[in-house]
Length: 409
DNA sequence: CCTCCACCGGAAAGCCGGGTCA
DNA sequence: TGACCCGGCTTTCCGGTGGAGG
Image (cartoon, rainbow, N blue to C red; front, top):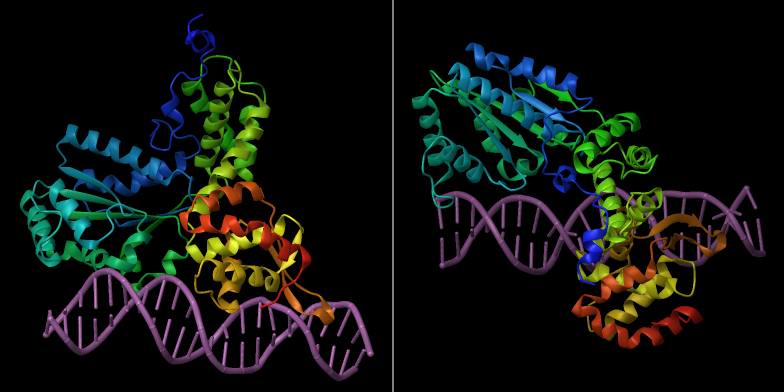
């Protein structure tokens, strides 16, 4: 028997795996018809020689903002080419292109100017871009995705872009800003806000039924016939709907479920695979967050995993004592309890630990801490850090302290 | 009803690394 | 280049508090 026979004989679940990835931009967006219609309407002046208003789009992650805009952009450019309308669209993700300089340089490049990616004064690049737009007479549509990432560093750039029209004779610039941060608006300078959000478009979260439609549509493209057990799509949709109606999460869940089924060489994606996928996504998220924690927080969390192995719940004071012990073992300066208290709140909001502030009457008021996540997984992730390696030596000793509740200084 | 525990959590100031500007 | 500024992290200080026990 050839080593690969098993793989060859197993039923192929995937027809096209990429359809389920974030980067995939479908031709067809269920339940976004209204937003597409509005966007098309708002942008139509571009094709008729007018100037559209600037547009501000917001909605939570996974509500189809980017996909919708990209789809409309694609259609716009096609039709512009056909009509010779001279519309140029540029999509910029501000998480990657994250300074005023880079935004302008990207635009310059799109217009055929050769601007180095660093080095020039920002206002010179601005002048260059302006001249390029003016001389080519294009109608430039700039999409700034995740614009909230830009605001702190480059508020001025946004401002100058929103005002560029007054300096142009025979060209036009229109801006679409996209943000998933609803608080973003309150951070923004009022001048900018008013010109940026002449029109607003809100993308509401999907509900379970809508997510189901989206998943069905993708599943048809992604999987071979008959590999889905009944109820799998519904379950994925329901779970994602509970978590704020994020289509990206729903698709992730379906993809991971399929991957698990594939790995188990099952011929069908079953409910149990979805359950496993939920667990896996959760753990992966946890491990990733723990990995990226700063050192002090890692030590603190490590202390808590040690305590958690012998007692279900404990208090800030107890965690702090163990934490201090560990710090001295590896000669790291311990933080104050005030600071640790903040770190604990952060860990809580990250969902790594669960804590409630309770009063034990005579015995004070404190945060009661539990660790609901898998302690072993946490420990493993923490021990990856070479700076915590040393602590394994003291594990037993420290655990004893935690168990006996001997908290001396 | 009052006390008093063991911490919470706000305010403000200090420290530090990085970036900016003359 | 050095003065300066900024934002993030941390410390210091301190007023506040729910409820068991008296």
